[in-house]
Each structure stands twice: as structure tokens, then as C-alpha cells.
Length: 581
Image: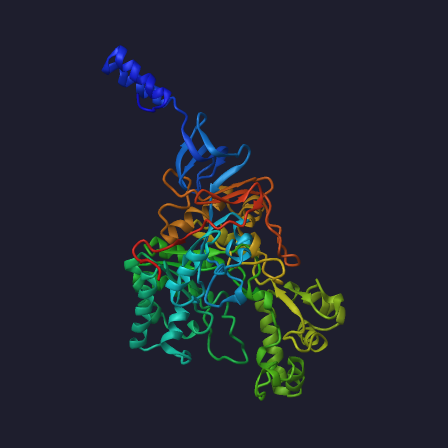
């Protein structure tokens, strides 16, 4: 007799004794009694499947990196078992706007790095993030094929999706002559580069329209390039031209005419989606500046109306009332601090010296104070501009309004004093952060079913210096603060905003939900203790309450410990993505 299992031999005996018809029934029943075996079994968890539906109790069976069974698997066994009793199990979180990598290089602090402390992305996976969408704000390395090949060679912790940067292809075609609209011929050459990147594995195009060189592009140019995404089912993600009453580059003393506003920027993103038919995203949407608080309502109305008309438009947000550029707040205008006569940086006079020179010019002094007033408002008002570093330690941790009151002067004069009395070689005299957004607007955006969660953060490691807390805490914070504490949305909706919603936006057909056949990108967390711990004083702190994180069925976090493993893969366009060079 062949070397078969005891159960199979028993079935053969049944056939010999009882005859063929009865044997089939016995054999099938006997086979059904065999315990099902999995690579991994998650037992007894409260499953939040990512759709926004209430949790249900179920076991999850994983084999070869995919979910193959979901339900009551009491009789099953596995190579490894997670007891999720009392815990919640959700799909892995998808960061739709990540700076884990981009064309800037960021001093080597990117996931494209042979250092395990970078490529494993510990600050990212410890939040429950299993997929990041990188090359944002119009910046991407070139060629995309080389970036992809590097990531695949070295390995990565989370999955990675690559965008092609609008700013990158614009500079490649126009060189340094970018402060103007492109010609039709130039736009055509840019479009060819976008096509090349999509063929090499990019899943869409990002734009940084508040930055150089995207700032000088036209809507028509963007439409030409975004149209290239349609055959590849690609997505357009835009850092829009303005995020409040005006762009960050605008100063009253330097620019004439009406600057673009948040509403103008949202309308442009909608127009690009309407004219091309592609999916478009208004990224890290906000209402910035104290004079613009409350304007989220009009932006929401514009997007909702467009969606009702069939435009495929979404938005994403990070759940903090302060931006990345808020962390580099310099209230004195840069033009007043620059030594334009210097032959080079080493010859330049210190910013404080230049400010003293210009304040002696009555006309320049008026313009300086006007710009400072504007910047204080844009950064949230004097009571929301906080001093984090300054030679006068008595000012550290206090806001500008409080310090101004102590000095017996208005906040504009205090801003000047911080520069002249502080570090004279540092613009601003110290490190200031503005809190430029209102919680009312943040909660209003969070409540929208078409707003995904995104970090706008990158790779961080203790010793990197100050970073925004969003590098470590974005996704737990959305659940803890905006769902459980503020009640802006339900826990189920918060999980959906960082799982199935970004998966749908990015065209991911097998991620973002807990469903049979889907990739086993999973998070097991404790709803009682999940919380962001990173602060602006101590940002390098991992979130709590995340017990396990799996990427393709492999642990990157186990029992709360970051394993520094690299099971992630580069996810390419389903309609492009030829093999990497």
C-alpha cells in the first residue's frame, strides 16, 4: 500500500467493505474532519474589516501571505497563532501621502537606504502602516525604474507605491527656466516622461503647486500630464496652490494682485479631474491661518458637489493643527534677512545684522512690520506661535503673545526682538512653531467619508533632531483623538479612512479590507490603549496599543516589539510596471 495518511487508508477499507457509493460519503466526511492548517491564525479578534461596518468576531487564517479563511476556525491549527481576544483586528493602514522617499534625498533619511533603521521604517510600521505612497509634492527620483530596482534589491518594511513628480519632469524639460508657463511642445515632452515613469512602475503623478517649479505651471499643463494617467488607471495627488487665504510664498510687500486661495486650489484639482476623468486628490487639505478658520465648509461643499456630478475627487488630511512648514516659522520676512550683496553664503552678513540695516530705512521698516503682521496671522495668531528654542531660556515653551505682554510691546516688535536678541546667525533668532489650523476645521474634514488619513511624514530615528509628531503618531491619533475623544467620526470610520478608502483611491484591488483572497496586511491593536505618544517637545516616541503588524503575513511588529524586518514589496501599476532595470 502507498504511504498515505491513516485517514485515507481508512477510507480505502470502507470502499472495500461497503462499496463505492457509500465510500464517497464516508471519505468526504472523514476528510472534512481533518483540521485545517494555516501558516498563521489570528484567533478571537474583533474584526474591523475596513469597510466602515461594525466589528464582528472572527478568526483569520493566513496562508502564503493571503487571507484564505475568515470565520469560526475553532478546529484549525497553524504554524503560528495570535490570540487576539479582547483586541481589534483591522487591515494594515495605508499612508496615501508619505515622504518616506522622494527626490529630495532628505540627507539619507529615506526608506531607500541600506541602513536597517531606515529601510525597515520603524516609526512607520509601529503606527500600523503597511503601505506608503511616496514621491509626493512633485518630487521623485529619476528614473523611477532605478528607484524601484533599489528598493526591491535592499528590501523594505512596508509596501511602497511610487509616484512620478510633476516638478521633476518639469525641471528635466525646462531646466532652470521654470518661472513661466510651459509651451505646448514642452508639455508634450513632459507627458512623454510621465508615460515612461508609468511604464516603469509609477502608479500616478504628484504635484507640488505651492512650491518651485510647480508654482509657475498652468492648469492646462497639468491636464496634459494628468491625461497620461488614464490608460494606466493612475491617480493625481496634489499639494495644491494654496491652503488658506494665500500661498506660503505670498507677502503683502512683495506681491501684487490677488493670490490664489484654498477655494481656487480646490477648484483647480476638481477641474483636472473633470477634464481628464482620472482620480484626483486634494492632499493634506486644511484651512490655514487665523483669518481663514471655518473655510473648510466651503471647500467641502465644492468637493461634494463635484463628486455628486461624477468627478472622481477625494482628499486626505493629517490629524494635527500644525503643518510641516509651521515648524520652521520665521516671522521676519526672508527678504529682510538676506545679504544680497554677498559673493556667497560664507561672505553673507548674519540675518540679524541685515535686519538692523533694513530697519534703519523707514520705508523698509514699514514693509517689514506689515509682513510680520501677515505672517503672525498666517501661523495662527500670536497666541499660537510657540517658541521652542531660543538663547533666552525664559521664552522657551511660551507663546509670542505671552512673551510680548511680558515685554510690554506688541507681538510684531517681539518678533523683531527675538531675532535681534537671539541667535543672530539663525533666521528668526530661534526655533518657532505656529499652530495655524483650527480644530473645528480638522474635525469637519475628518468627518467626510471621502477624506483619507495621511501622515505627510517620513522616516525618522532618534538622533535625527526635531520632527513633526506625525512621523510617529498619525494613524493611532486619528483613532484616539478624533474618533474616541472628539467624536468627529466613529472608530469604524476612522479605520476605513486609513484602510479601504485609500486602497480604493490608489486602485488597490487586494488590500485595505479583511476579506478572503486579500493580502494579509494586518494590524492587531488594543482600543483601550491605542494612542499617539509623540509630542512637539519629544517627537521620537512610538505610539502605544499596537500589538502586531503584519505585511503580507510576515511580522514587522510582534507583541509590541518592532522587529526591523523587511517583507514589503514595491506595488506597481496594474497596467504598467514593466520589470525594473
